[in-house]
Picture: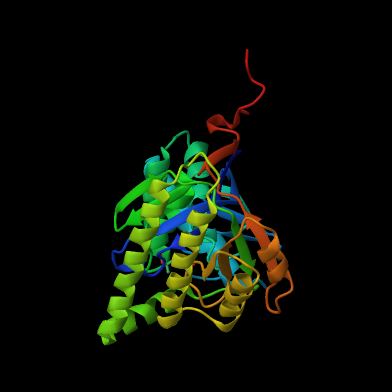
Length: 350
Ligand code: PMV
């Protein structure tokens, strides 16, 4: 059995605008999806998904994932387990030049689904790594990122940027502008994440912004202004010492930009009452800045605060279901156990 994991992420800046060629800066966080893969004798794919907040389920299928199985779990989890896994398996088979290989796959995720923390990207990235290793092929993280992007692109009907998948594969802070993807040297920022227990419909939210942008020049200008915020923010990161904890001055400036970014996302119609409530609760508690992260509509906000105040404030905010501190995940995709041929990686030194 091969086991790989990959981190989720928060957007420091730039979601939605990245879809239209503006830069974005996502940062990987220490909340991971772990995918275990065991090749089967037949060509069936059997997926078992376990999520922190939901009961697990098992589903077995072969061929197309168009027919959803009759299981009593929320659709996003079924889609995550089937659509994304199926696309990841397809990429792995293509990378290994193989056909008709079946797998038993287990997905365990610490990342809430559809909540703006890049759960699907982490599952696809870890899935491609584990499945290719199970077939005896080792891909470098950049190729995994590229294949994971293709998988997401297919599942999301072309509504995906490279931001989530590149960040999850590489780890750390990254900068993505169309197909130009780079890693950044950034200090470990004191992220606090608030989660309203819900999820947004990424496709519908992206379509909503596209529509506004086509109808109103000022909406198109708003998207470009998000790009300006990102360029300002990445300059601040470039000027900082990545080895040192961030200074209060840096946090204050980044926080102002996050507040501005949230305001523009709100104007573009992708925030929600619960996200706005959490953003305001974080600011009132003393966070340097706060914004929604990811597609919006519901899910998570990210705030900057090195003190415990924002966590405490959010914990007492109606509608905030969970709050946690998120360390920057410096490692992207990584092997957790096993390699091709089912030989354990540890304890085999001769
Ligand atoms: O909510 P998430 O983690 O799927 O992020 C979506 C980010 C968007 O910019 C809205 C879309 C994308 O593919 O970049």
